[in-house]
Structures are given as C-alpha cells and as structure tokens.
Amino acid sequence: MPQRFPQPHRSARASLAMAAVPITLIVAVTVIDLLAPAHIHLGPLLVAAPAITASFAGPRLTGLVAALAVAAQTLIAVLRDRDELFSANHQAQIAALVLVGGSLVLFCAVRERRAEELSQVRYVSETAQRVVLRPLPKRIGPLRVASLYLAAEAEAQIGGDLYAVARTGSGTRLIVGDVRGKGMTAVGDAALLLGAFRGAAHRQADLVELVTYLDGSVCWDLAEPGETDRSGETFITATVLDIPDDGGRIDMIDCGHPPPVLLRDGRATAVTAYRAAPPLGLGDLARPRYHVDSFAFGAGDLLLLHTDGVTEARDSTGAFYPLLERVDGWTEGDPAALLRRLRRDLLAHVGGHLSDDAAMIAIGRAPTSRP
Image 1 (cartoon, rainbow, N blue to C red):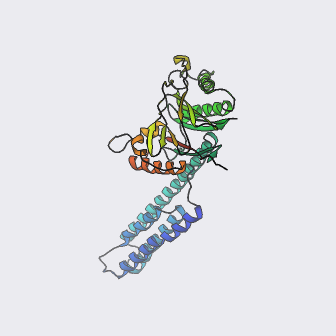
Image 2 (cartoon, rainbow, N blue to C red):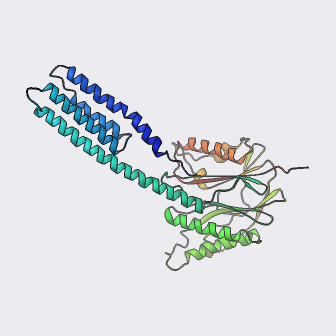
Image 3 (tube, one colour):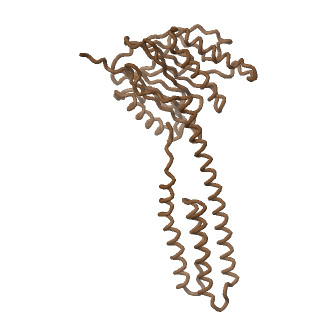
C-alpha cells in the first residue's frame, strides 16, 4: 500500500510554530545575561537555539535562528563590555556561534537533499508496485477480495512477493508466490511470472496446463542468453487457485508454497496439498507431475493466502508467528476486516518491524442472492 507523505505547506507551518521555542530561548538568555552579575556569562547557551531548530526545520530557518543567536551575542558584548568592546571572550563566543550555525545549516541542507531523494525513491517504488502488483478489486465475480503487502524496508515497498488474479469464462484464477532472493533480480522474476500468469490464465486450459506453462516460462527466462547460470538457485514458490463461479469448491496446485488457511465458522484449518509440487523454475531438474487438490469453499467461508514473511516473522525471543493458532477463533466475515486485524496482530508480534516482506490475500464467496 502506498504511503502518504506529509504536505510541504503543513510541514512549513509546523516548523514556523516550533521556531518560537529557540527564539524564546535566545530572548531569555540575552535578558538574563544582561541582568546577571558581571562574572556570570550565559552567552554560550545561545548555541542551543540553532541546534534545536536544526532538529525540525530546514537550512533557511536554521540559518535565520543562528543569525539571531549571533546578533544576540553581539548585543550582549556591546552592552556588557562598554569599556572593552568585543573582548577576547565575546569574540570567541561569536566565532563559535558562527561556526556551529554554519555547520548546522550545511547539515540541514544535506539532510533536506537526502529526504528529497528518499521521497523520490519511494515514489518510484510505489509506481513499480502499482505496475507489477496491481491492486486487486474488492469484488471479482461472486468473490470478495482484499490484499495487503507489507514491505520489510520502508525505502522499498516491493520485493519478491507476488500475487495476481484473472477472470475466466467460468470462474476466477489466482496466484500468490514468493521469489527466492531479494533485490531487483527478485522483482524482475516476480514481474516475469505475473506477466505469464496474466497472459495465460484467461485461456480455457485446465489448471495443470496453466502451472506447466508458468513453470516453463520461468525456466525459459533462466536460460535466456546473457543470463547467468542460475539453474537450481532461482525458483519461485507459488499456489495457484481455480475458483469456479457455479460451485462450492476450489481447485489448487501447491508448488512448495505455505498452505492457505481456511476459516469456517470461526475455526481455522490449513489446506495442505495432498501431493505438493516443487517450486516453479525447477522443472528441468525436478520434472514435476502436478496434482490438483480440491476442497469445499462455500458462502461464509474465508480463505487466507500468504507468503512465508507472515509465518516466519519472529518476535523478540525468536519465536515464529503462529498464524494458524492466532486466527483460530476469529469471526470476521469480511476479507478486508480480517486483513486489518491480522496486520495489527502480526506487527504487534514482531514489535512493529518485519524482517522479510509479507503478502496476504483474503477471499470470501458472497452469499447467493435469492429472488
């Protein structure tokens, strides 16, 4: 999900409001220093004003406060040392203020540039996410759908986790998967598989033919000229589903992916494949024979699909997130409500930060309307 960044004008107004703190500090230090006995010097405290400003403002406001601090120190020197204008002590304090203020302005300028670069990177990653991982509609035929992608790194909102859905003439096909590895290579492999699925899922082929085609597409990509030999090193775990519109069942082929979780009447059950196939991309090595598993899926049921970023999330003690145990007993009937609760519970388990990307999809069959 794309993150929303604060509006620039709102940040500017907040910075101007907070600027009252360092300005008040400058006024207070100046007045107290002038009223204090001659042997008490509070001028060095003026350096705190630009330092405080740099924590929340940009280079311009920080430079303005630093200039005010220098002016205040100069005023103290003029009013306190009338006989010896600008003594060595005051000269050193003014020079220190100029040096610290200039350094803080430079620091704020570099930080502002880095923030702009980071914002651009996030914008690009969000754009790539919308292109590769297209948002799933809330309704697909008779199904209600919700999806959620949690990135491990705040700077990059897309990795090797993937999901997609496609309509056929008689139902809905869905894939959720996870590419081995990280970085741009994983993103490229995910985009390849998603493109192959979107192009082939509309065909009126059975589920075995579809998965065979997807496995071949991944293997062919690894064998392309210019690619390094990654055979046996790069693969994609995936679960492919075929959900007919006019039936209360789901057909599934599991290619080494974590099993979906079926929630029915508040009870959670892992839908384990009878004969799981190896991950996609190992076809030349494993030569798999795909087996279709079917299970009942009626109105009121919810099916939760996920990547291993969910089940392998660890808490502070190193314990994995017990997905099946946690969702057992949940009675949310809406897919979006289920994912919202799962997100809160998962982030609470890991302390707010995931070590790996996590993708989740919840689907439910809408009740059949009767005349």
